Amino acid sequence: MIRLCAICLAAAAMLAAAPRPRVVVVVSANAEWREVRKLFPRATYEKTPYGEFFNHQGTVVFQGGWGKISAAASAQYAIDRWRPESLINLGTCGGIAGRIERFANVLVTKTIVYDIVEQMGDAQEAIDFYATPIDLAWIAGRPTPPVRQAPLLSADRDLIAGQIPELVRKYDAIAVDWESGAIAWTARRNHVRVVILRGVTDLVGEQGGEAYGNVAVFEQGTARVMKSLFDSLPRWLELMRGR
Image (tube, rainbow, N blue to C red; front, side, top):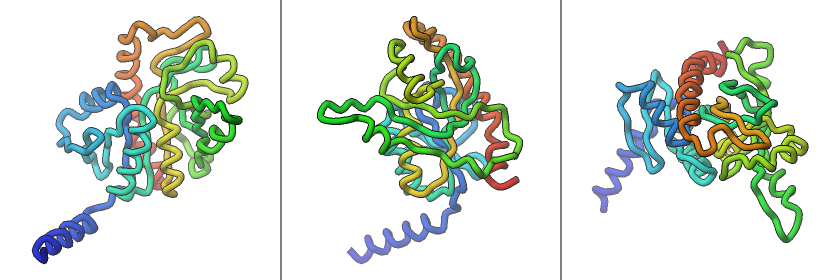
């Protein structure tokens, strides 16, 4: 028992002494992570309960998993394990046709989890509870890579074409994803700064989506979006360091 306690204390001491990354980059969906592996073929990948991670020039790049459940749990895991100052979520989103262009990058100002259905009362109270504004005052007046600043909606499903008019009316929606709402909410609860950058892989209009029934459109868009986001990552890290 004494020996085991000594081992535990030694392990805890090693963990405490390990360099603390200022930033953890979270990548969610499996298709997104496959592109990360292509971009960093020589990285040393290690396992977590949620997927993989590697260290790149002092920054942890971490696979969080798809959907709100994995996104919330893995964001908390990353915060507890690495104790970063900031999380950056890089990933994809679907855009609303006529309101944003394909391959545009969105710097998210607020996340809204919109797929909450309440039969006993008003669902808006729960939607408001999980809505998360994101503080971007620290980049005011500073040059950034080309992005569009806007809210992003999250749901555990792809965008339903028939819902577009309502989402535009209620939330001024331009794009949607699966994970950003959970990541932003978890980071805020932990008082960790969060930056969410999402690129539009495909568009959905009231008549349907260009990737619906044609997953190749999404996969090709994901390859282009993830390369663009990681190409811009060094500049975002500079901004976060005050440079």
